[in-house]
Image (cartoon, rainbow, N blue to C red; front, side, top):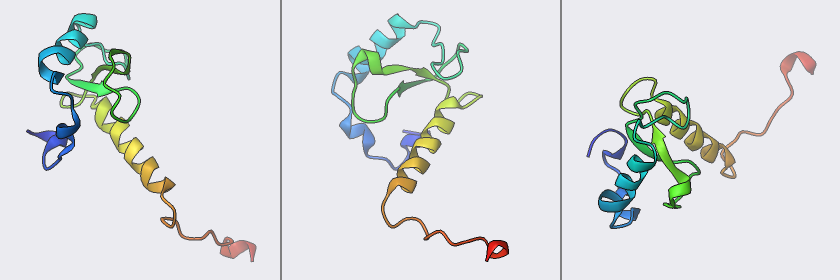
Length: 101
């Protein structure tokens, strides 16, 4: 495995028919691999539109990851940053700007 899967155990959560049925079905629905994020052809990564483990056909579509413009990488980064911000105790308490004291 390479790229984002390097060191990850997330692949273990994929259903057993991921390569044999799910990916081919996604290709059949979108043979030009139009990226669902930017609308351009050539998506090289089957992406979960909504985060999580919903592997239904409606929640899967292609996105650019290894190839520019790297739409999937930016989307995943934004999701990860949002999850970190949502964790309790991860933010410093806000303080008044020094110029307003």
